[in-house]
Structure formats: structure tokens, C-alpha cells
Length: 353
Image 1 (cartoon, helix red, strand yellow):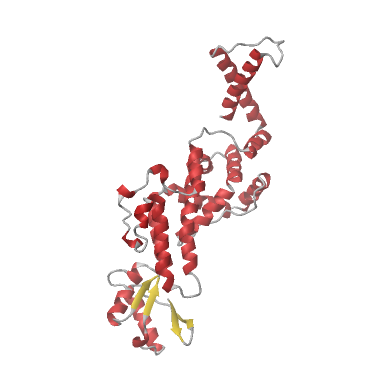
Image 2 (cartoon, rainbow, N blue to C red):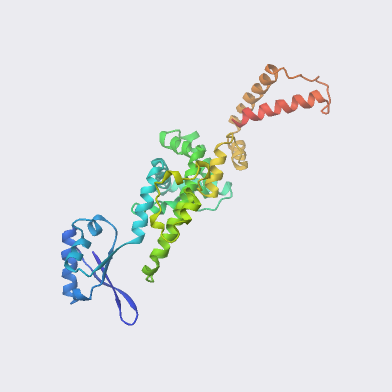
């Protein structure tokens, strides 16, 4: 148990009092150890004005917690929860509404590379091919849920080389794990969720970065919390309704569904909105790097695809009674131009698939 003292001596100071090993990690055990350490250091309870710790049940539970025991013994004591931990809990509860598969995907992806130098080295070749920065795939923290934001941002940065890497890997080792990763990367909604994670979690991370400062900022906490509530509320609620609570954002009712914006008007971030729009478009091999990679590394598959596409185009022309031009007709001949255009369009449609 770490005990840190903040005190005023002409200026605000913070010093580590004790790093104490405790055998009993219950609220009673920690409370007893803390009081004993303060008594040992001859710090009178009358001089204690505040207590802060991580916002867990042991420390700040409504019943039988360390903070409850301290307030019972020192009635004038002000207890303050960790704002960063509270922010973490709020965001993690909110994002529990997203598919759990997204968080699992980020963890599996990082484990895939951290557990194998061979995978790292092979992936570096794809990064070079796509002319993408040689950055590592980040690993989400187990106890800090907000670390998902930089992890999601890194995956988006490396999306093209990742897609090509797993495409190649599945062609060599088509096991369930590799196919699952490739399927998620090919799913257009994966990008939507990742872009939304980056957009939304950045708001919480900025808040946390501010209050993890070495300087005391408790006096600014209310203003920052109010700003965060207003910002988040405007994303999905009527602006006029939200603005009517500018001076008291805590009175905003987030469950007041009659004040919700229409689904298409909810703001999820510019990049996430674009990703959602892209999902509505026909899927094809549109990225130049992906096309080039397919041509260079899968020549046999490309040849087979071209044969299949040509047959599809010929059948399309025949079934739709498209006039076939004379073999000796010039490229400028109207029938030839129409035939070539329809044939190429049908060919591209099948080849892209």
C-alpha cells in the first residue's frame, strides 16, 4: 500500500510517506494499516483535511469501505474519488454496448505479433511494400481500458499492410485463427467501430491527461467535467436542449429519448461517418496497393479470375442481346465501341468480385 502525503509549507508539496506491505487487503485491513502508519509518523488526525484513492469498492464503496471508515473516525475529512478512474469506469461501461469482438480483435492482433518475431519480420515486408511507417501493433492494457484508443489508431494506420499480410498468411496457413483475423479485417464495419473508438475515447483520454498532471487541478475539475458532459451530449441530443443546461450540465437527462437526434444526425466523428458511408458502397478491390499485390503475388489466381471474368462478360453480352461487331470493324465503329464498353464493364464487375 502506497501512502502519499500532500501538505502546505509555503507551497504545495507531495511526498511518499510509506510503501507498506499489507497482508490484509480488505477495507478493514487497509484502514487499520493507514491509521497505524499516520500515528507512527505522528500526524494528528485533526490536521488531516482530505483523502483520495482509486475508485474501487474497497476504497470508496458505499458500505464498509476505507473512505467510509475514515469519515466515521474523522468527521471533517473530505474524501475525493480519483477523477481519472471514474472517467475510465464511465467510458468502459458505455462502450460495453459495442460488440465485444472489437476489443477481442485488438488484443488478439497485438498478441499475434508480440508472441512471434517471425510474424513481426514478415509484417515489416508488407509495411515496406505499402510504404507505411514501420510502427509496431500496440498492446491494450489489461487494467487501463482507455489504452484501446492508441491501439485502434495504430491498427487504422497499418490497415492496408495488415490486410495484405493476413491475405497472404491465409493462403499459406488457412487455420481458424488466421481466417478469423482476415475476416474481421475485410469486414467494413470493423473500420467503422475502430474510427468511432478513436474519436470518442480521445475525449476521455484528453480529460485524463489533464488530471494526471503533477500540478493540483482539483479546483478546475468541475469545469472540465461540465465541458465533457456538454460535448458528449451534443453528439446525440438536440443542441437547444443541451444548451439550456449550460450552467448545470449534470441536470441533462441522457435517457430523455424525445430529445435524441435522428439516427443519421448523431455525430460519431468525421472518419467514422465516412467509414459508415463506405459500407453502403459496393465492395471491390479499390485500393491500388491491394490490386498491385494481387497481381504480383497471385499470378495464377489472377489468370483464373480473368478467365472466369471473360466467360461472365461473354455470357452477359449474349444474354442481353448486345450486338456483336464485325471482326474487321474499326475501333471507332459505334457497334464496336458499345460492345467493347459493355464487355469491359461486365468483365470488371466479375473480376473485382
